[in-house]
Image 1 (cartoon, rainbow, N blue to C red):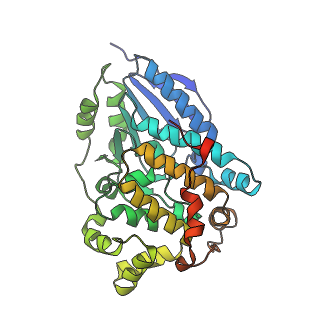
Image 2 (cartoon, rainbow, N blue to C red):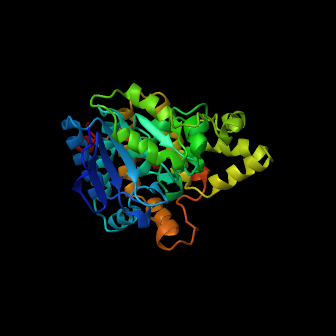
Image 3 (cartoon, one colour):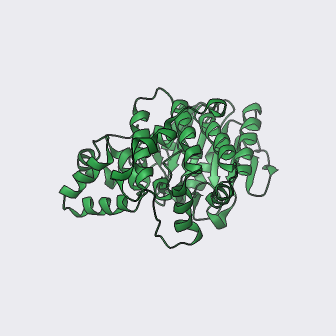
Length: 359
């Protein structure tokens, strides 16, 4: 039997098409490493609706156009401009995105994310909640939001708080990059498939039978996988667990300052570049996330905090230094961890009435 010809649904920044038994969602802004816009997020939701209702679609595959990565995150330049103008893009964009993140986690058909190349921020939200998460030797996964005066969102506080020990606190606060095996060890991915074998895996996925189960898709992916489950960070877990086993950032810094090893000092340097307020908010969200009963509970908290971030000077300053002026010299407010007060923190965790995130 001949497989049906590819059927294109939409083109542009998001390509949605059927190839055999697979519904393909391709992020299509390769010049900006497929940075996610609000319109693309809406388009993903529409695609998920169509694929869920179509009995000819057995599996969904998420991929990124170009050679550089799946997705570099959200379109932060647009968010920056809206924040400066007193607009509401953050409120609209993050509501749409976070509800979609929760939907992906519960999607009824097997959803396979190809996390090849760069995967950051919003790209993590689209992929790391998937049932089947495939990384490669080219994967560079990170949640660097604290360096933008923000925190790891899109359900990042749920994912990071479920990494082994304090591995999630390390990656969430430092913004350091995970390679493919690191991502598997940190519970952000499931299988490493060499990038050269992705086309063959993709072809196999387009040829699965209707009604294929997640267990069967997992077995199929395993045929292409190297079987690796831990990267370089696993060997450093004991150190990381000691440094980050605190509920106050001041204590984390004190632990690192007492350790003169190269790894400790490089970690300290990374933290010193981040927003003090962003780090304190992140650590608290991670600790709350550890006790959360669901991804949705974490997303509700993240949305409250995100709206406060959107109004903050640190958010605009972080994006200015990293993306607009590119001087890499943000002037954080306040500039020191010890100057972050409970009064500053309270609005990030306060209920927001009619604006609360609802699923």
